[in-house]
Every structure is written in structure tokens, then in C-alpha cells.
Image (cartoon, rainbow, N blue to C red; front, side, top):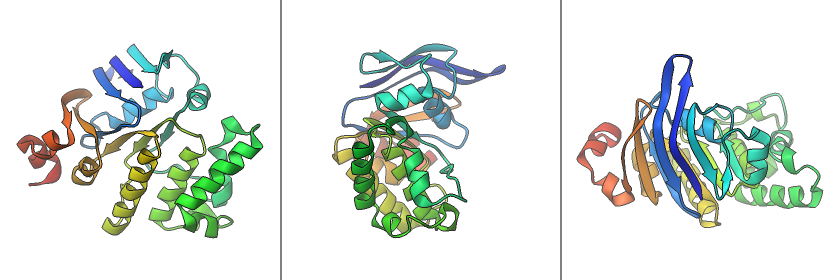
Length: 235
């Protein structure tokens, strides 16, 4: 469904990604593991059209995404939930959510249906819909960020470090929601430093180091890999 083939990205003279090959089948939950700065965010920014690939191909179904406008990529069903949430803290929860539906704004009935689904997934956001996003807890802000991405009606959802800075109990809740989104039929590509929690819900996983994919395998293969356990799980 989503396939990156030999994708390279340069930031000036620095090569951030070097011949990256990744694929996610329809309905899969695929995890990207790697330390901060390994290249996970660069992959997502490139898939979503915010970074320009120096070379390679990114296919979503039969569509080539390289060279497309970010808004068109969202319209086609690939939606990016960025690291750090990137909310508008002075705007209400509802307005933040509605920004995610911008590409579908002409379909008012469809937007309302999606909003109802987001509120069903995150009841606390319905309760706090008129509150400023900046007044929410870290976990609630992450819910807004995921909800805003869902308003784009993703077929493939790119989630960048959704557990970052959250308490363990909140991390557990966020990962349960990610599983629920995936089980509803949405393909999920999840970038995470929290390797153990991510692998527990993954179909497959890739390990990225210094812009290179250095390992890939099934959930069990990576959970039981001694190198992965030492580097990312601490056991």
C-alpha cells in the first residue's frame, strides 16, 4: 500500500536518509525504531511532501507521491501526525481538530461524521472542545494531535513519537487507541523510541540508524533480537 524505494534526502551537504526501503501493506501496523536523530521524522516529512526526496520513489497504491503537494497527499489518504503535536495552543480543541479536515471542508456532512468518530474515540475532547488546546494536559494534547490527523480521513496514518514526554499510564492509553485505529482498517506507520511498547502492537518493524535501515523483521524477531533489546529496550 505504502512503499518507499531507495529514498534519499539531503539537508544541504548532509545526507539525512540514504537509500531507504520501507513498505507497509494495507491494514498493517509497522514500527520505525531508532534513536533521536536517526531519520524517523525525515522519513515521515518526506512521505508527506514537506521534505523533498533527492532520489527514489514513494508509492501509495499506484500513485507516486514524490513531487505532489502536501495537501494533495492528505487528500489521497496519507496523513502525518507530527512529533511534538504542533497544536495551536491559543485556539480551542474544536478549532484545532477542524484544521485537520481542511482538505475535506466542502463535505460538511462527512466532516461532522468524522468529528463524531473522533469524539467517540476521545470522549474527553468532546468535554473540552471549547477549551484552549494549550490548557490541556500533555496526554490530552496528544489526543488532539491524533484526532486532528484522523479528521483528514487517513488510509495510512504516520504517527511520529506519540508517546514522547507522556507518563507511563498515558502512554498505555495512547497505544491502546493506536491499536483501535489500526483495527478499524487504517494502515499505521509508527515512529517510536519506546521500543517495547511499540513492538508489542506491531505487525512488523524496521530499525533505522544514521539514515540507513539496518534491520527489519516481525514483531517476535525484533522483540527477541539481542541487539535490539540492548539498544532500545534495555534488557
